[in-house]
Image 1 (cartoon, helix red, strand yellow):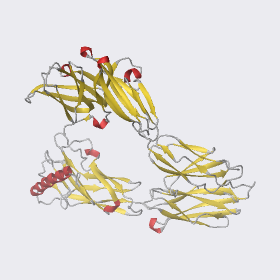
Image 2: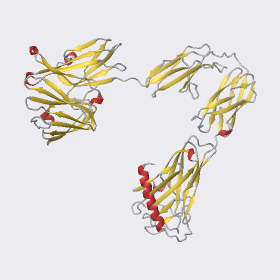
Image 3: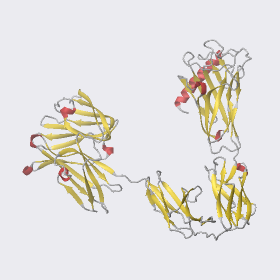
Image 4: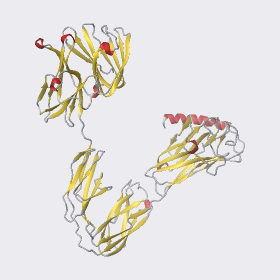
Amino acid sequence: MNPKHSRLASQAFVFFLILFALVAAAPVFAQDAVTVGTVTATGNTVDVPVYVRDVSGTPLGRDQAAGSKIQSFSITVDYSPAAAVQSVTFTRAGITAALSTPSEGSPGTSGTITWFASFDESTNLVPFTLNAPPPGDQIAHLVFTLSPSAAPGSTITLALGSGTVLSNQAGTIGETSPGSLTLVNGAINIPNLTLAIVPNSRVIEVNGSTTYTVQTSSNVGSNTTVTLTSSNPGIASMPASVDIAAGSHSANFNVFGSAVGAATITATLPAGAGGANATAELTVNPATTPCTIPTAPQISAPATANTGTPYSVSWAAVSSATDYVIDESTDANFLTVTSTNVNATSTSFTHAAANRYYYRVRARNQSTGCNTASLNSNAVSVLVIVAPVAQTRVLPVVGSVPGNFGAYFKTSVQLYNPKSTAVSGKIVFHTQAVSGSASDPSLAYSIPAGKSLSYADLLPAMGIASGLGSADIVADAGSPFPVLLARVFNDAGAAGTTGLALEPMAASDALQNGDSGVLIAPADTHFRLNIGVRTLEQGVGFDVTVRNKDGVVVKTTSKSFGPTFFRQIGSTEILDGYVLAGGETITIQITSGSAFVYGSTTDNTTQDPSVQFAKKVE
């Protein structure tokens, strides 16, 4: 049982113990009534109303003084057999539906369920109609979902339990049975299955065939065999039986007209399913023209297809065929099928769900005076799968841009394909201070097996003269990632370079909502610190806490950035004017979204850069 329901049930139990201790034992002649409705199921879901009749002269009611109105309910319903019920809810309805209550619950176990509620008389008076005709006013309803084992022709009894009580708001006056309360039980009647043959008559020519459908009044709970007979097998012949699949209510069968005349077709359900029967008529006329029976087509289809993408099932044209019927099923035995008539030799299918789908086709000759059909073709299947999607890795910072003190920073990228087949994809650049979009510049790559590819300065290779931002490495759908080495460096010309390597990072490497990460400021002012943020698709919000070397909090602030957004700025700016003295720690607490957060430290003398990423603190 749900802990909340258990707590509510315990509170209700204590409430009604007090109620019973206070209820007067004096005999009462007039009786209010609680009634559970009796209904006939018309489907899998059954709505059963619950009523209360307020009768004058009882301890509680609209004819009594304030404080003696019917304002609280505890109604228990036992249902049997419990196995016939898959689930049940017990909730307010009718005159209580629009009321509000601070105390309400519906605990239950297999075979029983209770609804209890209490309403404030001064603000939510329950609007009973005094002496209303039976069964009174509806105050709640039970909604049952029947299980497949609920047998046609059976009854589910609905009995009000002895714990059923009506009381005033305070719980000091109560009505129970026996005494001042009448309990009227109900039931759910599940009707027997009925059977029909559709259509109820057909006319064909000799040596022709036609299709009938057997239909039950509701879905069967298990595979059900319907027996088929002909009053004159020499005129109308058919299979001895046809199966209606579990969860369905119909099945098709073919009838062949062997000779001129008329016959009655009878379908009968098994005794365990009610034994209902139905009939249909078949009239076989002389053939006006010779009707050729087409040969079975040969069908073909792709082995696989992607969800949401159309694919074609096709077959070669069959001589004398006027049209074709294609069956689709998720069952290799075609116990349940969806049939489509087509005039072409192919048809298209699209499925949103991954599954294996089976197909077969038959040719029909529906020319004037003819109604013949071939045997079913061979069966083929198509495995519908979720299409592979492009994968992405992130280089949180790339650039080709001048820095302070005469520095000039560049980004080189090397790609290597260790696979035995080619890999392909693209590098997408997102400039700083602007959310990424589909129009951002990109550079496609395709690398044969075992080959390498390199860019001495990534941005100029993409046609971007200068800039600072981040880059996504996007592998084409189904393609692995190449091995990638990126280096951010200060190009000092003849004096050489100083720099660092960057690893491409997956989205899972980013700080996520609820994570904390830490950056450590340089130990002294011989270095300068920039802080960079690269967000993912949800953007990011985070709190910043700066502590000095002694652990004292010296600055707090909060920041937020949009989706696919990059920004690298000086520490003083991102810390809202706080100037680092040296050795501080900067704690990043993610409050929404996700992002890569890093610190870029540069030697003011040599322009030698280094980088630290704020990793999740475990």
